[in-house]
Structure formats: C-alpha cells, structure tokens
Image (cartoon, rainbow, N blue to C red):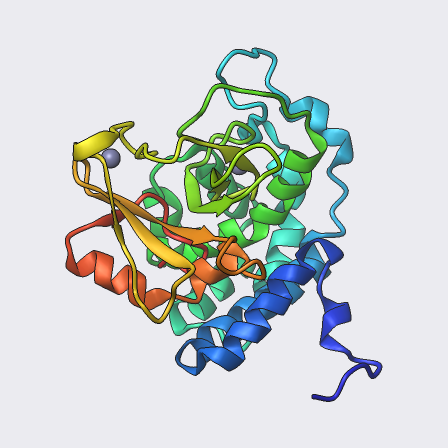
Length: 292
Ligand SMILES: [Zn+2]
Ligand SMILES: [Zn+2]
C-alpha cells in the first residue's frame, strides 16, 4: 500500500471519524462484494468532513437543550435553526459523489435546485419524524433518497451537539437519551467491573448508552418471548438480535471477539444479515444510513 502523499485519503476525513474510515477500508478489502457500498460510504464521510464538520454548532447547544429533565431526550433537535442550513445543504447535495445510486443523484439535483424553504422543510421533517409526503411531492422524488440526504447532512451536526451536551446516568432507555432517535446497532464489551456490557448506538447522533443484555429495545420484552440470536459463521463477531414478540431486529457487534470492529460500519458492511432477517419477516428497528 502506498502511504502518505499530498492527497492522502486519511487526511480527508474528520479526526472523529478516522476509525470508521479505517474500518471501512479494511472491510472493503476483506469483503469485496460490499466494495461499492463501502466506497460510497467513504466518499460520504469525506463530503461530511468538507461540508458538515466546519458548521459551528457550539452556540446552539443552549437552544436545543431540553428544559425538562426527567426521561426526555437531552436535545430537542427540532429546535435547531435549520433555515440557516439551506445554502450548506444545497452545497452538500450538489457535491454528491458520482458513485451515488441513481435515485440519490436525482434527489440531490432536485434539492439543490429547489427553493430554500423546500430544503428547510425537508430537514425539519427528518428532525420531527413527520411523514415525508410533502417534500417528496414538491421535489418529485421518492422518500428514501430524501431521507438519506437529509440524514447524511444532519448526522454530523447531531453528533457534534450530542458530544457537547451533558450526559448523565439516565434510566435504560429504548431510544437515544441524547437525541431521541432509535438505536442503529448494539455493541458488547468487557469493562473493568462488568463482563459483556451492552450498549446501544444511536442511529442519528452516534451516542452510545447502556441497555440490559436480554431486553428487546423495540418492545421491552425479555426472557423466553424476547430476543433470539442468529449468527453467520463467516462473521463471528456479529449476530442478529431478533425479537420473538414484536419481530424487530438489530445487529450486535461483539468487540470482545473483534476489538477493531466499528459497530456503525460493520452494520453497513453486512447486508447479507439484513437480507436474511428480511427473509424471516423481521423488520430492522432503524434502517442504517444507506437504507439497509
Ligand atoms: Zn442520538
Ligand atoms: Zn420486541
């Protein structure tokens, strides 16, 4: 491998995401059938680094911090002044890499050419969790690529705010205690006092929080009627955690088996497990960034 050089790819990714990029490059070599998917993911990390990472969000922490306390998420991201993002979001869409799937390229062009308030509506719709029917109709695009673009743009903003906001020992929550989004993936690791601690990793802001091992995050059931596990022998550090009661699933990454795994990336790089789950009639708690 040729290292360094003035256009070393490593330097094109924000330091916070270096481990994700490194893991994606490793998996790209190890799992050639996912190469196109991972190449696209890497180019999105570079675009997020160029366009999203420079957005200074620090002065908005107090704007989005939840006044409440209690079990409410600490951040209310729908209070973000998304109208200030209109131009940057347009740039993000215009610079979508050529390797993007055709529906994403089409949607990116429509968003970049749309009126500012349409872009703002789309971003706000993602943050409030409302139906995408209106922006989808106005832009003449399917909802899925619109969700991808809005989420890829807003995730780094959410991740920055989530890291800046105070965290605390909340009760085990089924959704992210920072931003209220559902978990993307589960991870297992040993800690100094406890073996096999399970954390859920947020689908939007990437925060991780402790959650009981045997409990389904979607419906709260445990025991006989709760989770069952599916392992693919080619991927010993991964398993599908599927709930017998509500038929939802998410993947779990065991960092004790493979310490170099990056749960968000390993989830993206194993579409065969999602295919298997779909064939079983299971529904993912939260599709990942690439919609799998
Ligand atoms: Zn979150
Ligand atoms: Zn369940």
